[in-house]
Every structure is written in structure tokens, then in C-alpha cells.
Length: 428
Image 1 (cartoon, one colour):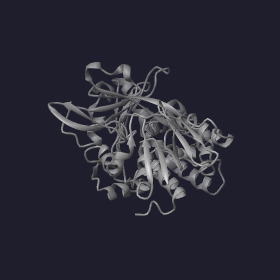
Image 2 (tube, rainbow, N blue to C red):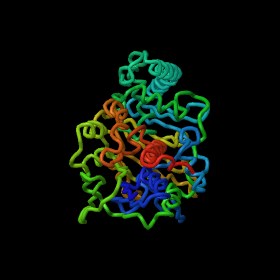
Image 3 (cartoon, one colour):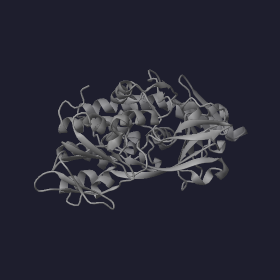
């Protein structure tokens, strides 16, 4: 078969990896590089030049079994990383961070203000075990069909007797940081989806967390390794503008400024809204399912400005969330890459989302535009209908957006589609 793959993120890469062994493939990528969120850049800091990841950073064997198996097959080395969280709550006047075995807090204000902030933090910490128990119980009830899988996090927290301050001060920052989610929408996500995601990542308990790992040399090491065998079949700077199903079978793929090419099948491995826009004859089911999954832009800045980190260096963590004092300001997230990757510098190297205006322009090393799926109740509900759409007129849909939005989900989506196209194609 002659198969087109649209999109060079993890899903497109994995689909090409499997299908290229028995079929003629062509991978179309709109950008000038492969990888999508796997984007490693070289920076110069303190007289040293080294690679830093700006999108996909970490994985672990427990919750990324397919992706880590892929890395092993490719011979890509990983090294230990750290998963920790800090919150700088400017409203409450406290900043705190997690460590593998304990919670640390540093009141941001002196005297009575600091004492009140410390008491507020102590109350938040005291409620974490209740949150863990309630979340675990919810998943059991959903699995037994005794609870609504679409109940929002806002509703669930109230029903569990957890105050809004706990959701806003702990659950929202945690979810927003790890999921790259818009904090303003987290409370409207299905509670069961969030709890299942956190449980899968060892974050619905204070113990038995998996060992997180990062890729030696950055995430581009796997991008280079996976694409090497079929590098001649890649077209970069080739945005697909239209997919047209042919009455006699097959699909015409049109790239901007070029004549359409005929393929027997197409794997569409881009964000759902982008995918839907390519198909002028989308049927009602395709419009409903793909149209339910929105994306949110996440402007991302790579920099060395420590001012966006907690004021107290003892609280610095891998993921650092700032809850602004003014309600109209966005919650912001900064990844401290020195804790996530083995960097040859003590200067803080940061990747920040949604706080461009707070970063010293002289400290900026690079700026990038990424997008993440918004997995609200509508998206989660319609994800379940995606298998019914596969193969209609030779078009197959795949992406991390079909599940939790992570590299493991993109890998799974690609393998499921490959098995539909060619059973046995993912067996090595």
C-alpha cells in the first residue's frame, strides 16, 4: 500500500516507524523539523553549549510502557529525572514545594501575614490525604457504574467536602503544571479523568511513585533514531491543506502550492481541529467527534530569569506554578530544567508557559508556540466514538488528543491505527 502520514509529532513518527516496514509511506510535516512537542534546542549558558528540551521532557516505565518499549527498541538511553511541584501563591502569601518524602513551605510574608500564610498552607496539606481517598473512591465508583464519569472537578470537590481554596491551591496547580492545561478550565474537566490521570502518574498517593526519566541528549535523540530508516520519505515545510476521498477508493492529499497526490490510505496525526479542517467532505460523525476536541495555545519561553521561580530557592521544584494576586492574571507555569535534565550549569534554565511579559528580555534564549488539547467533558465523551470513524474512505485519525494528550497516548493511538490498517504491523 501507499500510505500518507500527515504530521511529524510522536503519533506520526510511530505510525511511520511501523508502517514503513511493509508499505511505501510519505510523511508530510508543516514545520521545518520533525518531533512536534519533542523539541530540543541548543543553548549557550555560562560558557557552555548544551541541549535543552522545551516541550516533551520526561517519561517513566510504569505509565509509558509503549513509549519506553519503543525507546528500548531504538536504543535510546534515558537518565533519572525528578518530579516535584512548587506553588507560589501570591494571594495567600505563601510559597511551598514538594519533595519525594515531604512537603516544604515558606511563608512569603513576615510576622502575622507569614503566620496566617503558614496556617493556610498547613490546612491545605492536611486535606491532601482526603483528596487522595476521595479521588480513589471516585474511580472505583465510576468503574462499577455507580458514579457519573462526566461530573466536573468543581462539583466533585464540593461533594467530597473539600473547599474551593484546596482545589485552587493544590489540584488546579498540580493538574495545570503536569498536563499543560489552562488553569481556568481545569475545574470544569471531568473529575474522573483528572483522578485517573493522576493515579496513573503516581500522584493520587504520597508513596509508590514511579521513577521519572529524561532522554539523554534531549528528546530529539528518539526523533532522530526513529526517523533515520525512512528519512528520504519525509517532506518538511509541507502543510497539507486538503484530503479528498476518491469514489473509486483512496485519498488525494494536497499540499499547499502543489498538485494532489493519490494514496491508498492516510493517517491523520495532527491536532483534531487541524485534522477536521483538511476534510471538506467530513460527515456528521467526523464533525462531531473531531469538533469536540479543542486546542489551547501555550506560548513558551526558554530563559534564565529566576524572578519567575519561588522567591525562596529552597522551594524550587521541577514544576513551579505561580498563582497571581490579581484574579484577571493567568496562572503561570515554569519548568526548572536543571532539575529535569542533567545540565552542566548551576544557573537556572527555565521553560515558562503563559508569562511572556514577566520575563527579562535579556534572559530569553528562545520562544516557541505549542498547542495542547483541551480535554473537557465534551472531548472525553466524544473520544469514545473515535474507533467508529477509522478507515472511512481510507482516512484514519490518530493523536495524543484521543486520550490524555501525552507521548504514551500518541504512541498508543498510532499503534492502534497501524493494527487497523495492517494487522500485525506493530509486532517486532
